[in-house]
Image (cartoon, rainbow, N blue to C red; front, side, top):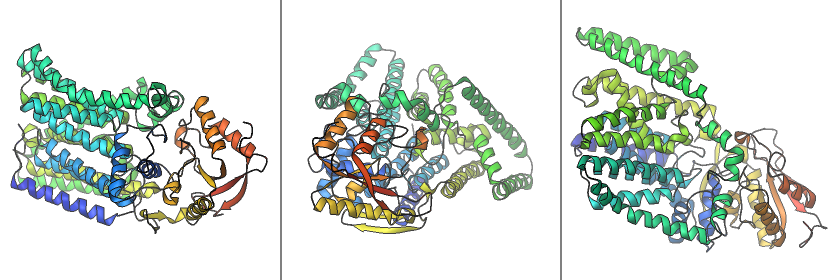
Length: 604
């Protein structure tokens, strides 16, 4: 069983807490991006706190738990960004602590600290991929709940009890109602745990007895599902809300491209290529272990010379050929197929559990190797310390780093009984590459820069630093929406820019407020949206230059949502242009006014 926390662990946890505090204070209000997904995460809980019903009155693509939890924060503390910042930051701290405790079940505290350090560092970047103001609070809270579930499952492998198994089932149910993939990973891991416990007891009655503990969690799932279905039926929820449902319009139209971009590609060529890379990784580090074991028999200065030479080579390569350094690191250190490697580890972990009669330690190791890949399957070949992976990679990082040290230095080094200095050096190199990669991403990708020429935007709904490239056009759009609302005129934002509604304090006139590719389903949903625009009636449209190259269909109304685009062009005309900046990355928008002959009740 994992040992209890010792004095050294408390010191390391205190260091992590200090790091978290520094990251929170240093980046306060600089996270997020108000022109894309983050606006949805502000707007939806705000309208829910005013009495609207999720899905029925306001569209949402994930489970109901995150928006209703945030709406509760708004009801208690007022509609303001500060509660969201703090709740997201707390979730990041919970994830870091969870990863630290999880790693202690199978590795030395060096591994635990390194994995938790990476979780914290990647959680407070700028752009939309962070924890305080993310593209999705469902992903933020889901990752925290999933790690709490994992700790409960690991503990149950050693000391199973009805109360602990009930808690695991309830946490799995909560994760399911945050984001589907989190819940499925938890329930899949729980199935492995229950079967392992039954095989250990050599009793199918034990499996039945343990399965009964799932009842509270399954009851939560059934009750929430029944409520959701009561709002409009199964098809309404799965086809007109949940974009990632397997049979949804989005998945049928854009799913294959989207999954491939995020790292899930099971083509034979891709799988073969990454299996070959995995073989190279294993051979290299086993060879390193052989060399190091020989050096360990020599005098210390030979080992020191080896380390200095290797370190100098890494530093030189990073300084003078950063592209080559990154290429090498992603093959020998921080693998982009890391999820695949951990998934492959589940096979020997299962064999080991079988041979050891499902002993607590072997079952816990199997649970650890199963959970990470089940959760992170969508980033199978695209592991990064940034972007989508930050919500899925905590458990995978811990298991992989333990595997790296085991391959390079042996089992005793993993437990801290031998080669502690070298194990520490490997962990530090791992962390250093993550910090370097995040910094490199900040230069390459403007969404991940915290201090990239920003200006404070202070409002009664919260403070946020805006990138200057979206000023002054975006502020003009907010002001225009406020003034129109004061005159009783309805304004609608297209295709996204949901934060305009939030900061202007107005509600979107249609149930669907973000027209990203695949969100608006052709046919019934499109006709209902047009009818809602007619009933409002919508006098003005704010149409921004937001494009969607990541989906392969960049232009709203031209490459996708053609019916709605034709409707807009036939009834509205551009009258005002916000900002004429020559910068191609600048946020721009135009105001379209309803033409006089297209008054309320006009034909469709």
